[in-house]
Each structure stands twice: as C-alpha cells, then as structure tokens.
Image (cartoon, rainbow, N blue to C red):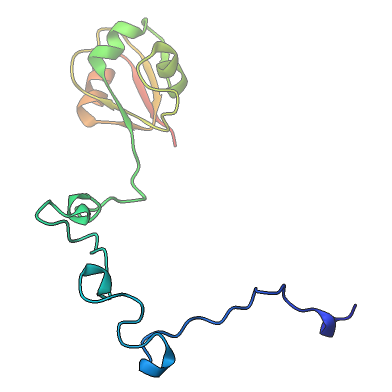
Length: 149
C-alpha cells in the first residue's frame, strides 16, 4: 500500500445538501422547513435572550457586573484580641503557629494583623502585614514586629 492508494471509508465524504437554491434543485423555496411558523424562520427556537416575558437567562447572570483584579493579594485578617487569648507571653506568632491555634485556615497564603482589642502580653510577630495601630499596641506591650515576605 502506498500513499496514493489511501482513500477515506465509503460514505465518509458526504456532500452537504444545498437547500434554497430554486425550485428545480429539489429543496428550493421553503428548503424542507415547511410553511410559516417558528421552525421555518432562520433563528428557530429563539435565542437565549428571548424567554417570553421571563427575565432572559443572560440577564440573570452576574458576569457583566464589576471588576475582579486577578493579581490581588489576599490576606487572612487576625485581630489582637483573638491573639491575646490564643498565645502565651513570649510566644512567636507566625503563619504556622496561627494555623495550629485555629485562627486562620491551612491554605492561607498571607496574614495581616489588625489592631482591634488590647494585647496584655509581649509577643514576637513574624507576619506579612501589620496595621499601624496594631504595631503600636504590640510595641507598647513589649513585643516586636518583623515583616516577612
């Protein structure tokens, strides 16, 4: 067998029926669609935007609204009042220790410490972000803050 002997299976190459090409062509005039009615129209079955008075399907979808930044950086937020109850004095607060304490989820990439509440004990923070009010309260309690990437 050579390349010039290769042919497609019988019935594979089928000519497309050419409809609506005049009355002598066999499928002229109505082109096999019958007479009148929705099925005889070019866009039979309507569109997704036409639902006879009901709110159209496309209008009910939310993808046209707003803007989502794909490059946003998400932080898990933890307040000082929750940290005060979870850690002993002198403890080191990192992402791993917060996961162990159950304050953030395991799949959290970054942590931000917020300044709500008071911090009675001195803690060492090694986190990605700390607000200014939280930093002032931590240093007032005798703790330290180190920003890690």
